[in-house]
Length: 277
Image 1 (cartoon, rainbow, N blue to C red):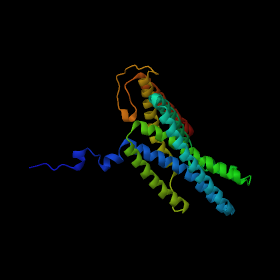
Image 2: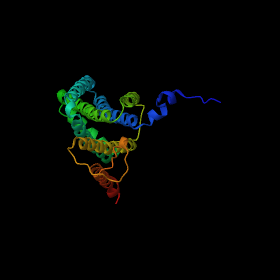
Image 3: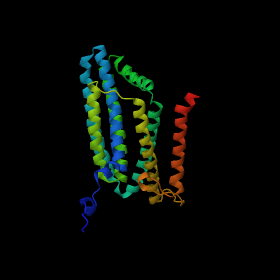
Image 4: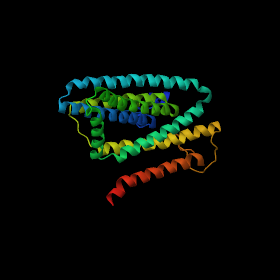
């Protein structure tokens, strides 16, 4: 009896399940979903406050601000791609330093979200943004607050995606991006229609865990790229090697990753355990 071959076996096409569970898809989805949702939460909170105080005319300033942020974000993305194309001769060096910077930023973002995972702290953060924007009755201040809140998320997203593209295949990354955009669009619609309530604590903790994994991966990959250029020495170590997670069998990659894990443990202790004691 002849064995029926699946098209995925013949042409080595990844199955849908494999794509959805792949590291590049999950990383891409998490980054675009988390970065977009933070900006949306801030904008939605300011919209809500303007409704409460009856400042409906100021809403157009918010629209101008986030649209301008997206416009300048696209320009930033194009400039970043252009600069990367100019540095092809030192591509590995650029990739290495970019990955390390992205790792540090990711770690900081993850720690910040863990420490502000309680709804009360997040509410205080949002209210400080709103107060800064509204108290002076200056529409320029309102514009700048919303603009930089959105642009900062876009800039971080560009940095993270540049690093993802260096490590993984573009198809899975693109798929994760579009699924993430679709998901956050649905969430945004429901937020602005006031039909969605979710526990910020679980959202922050869940996304932060993935950000920490990405941070460790980016750090290992960045150091490995600098080792390939000879900028950092390479000392072999009998340890696990798993490139998708940025794990390489060298002291130079493993020790910084262990330090990062130790810092994470300290942050978790300071946020949760010490507070309870």
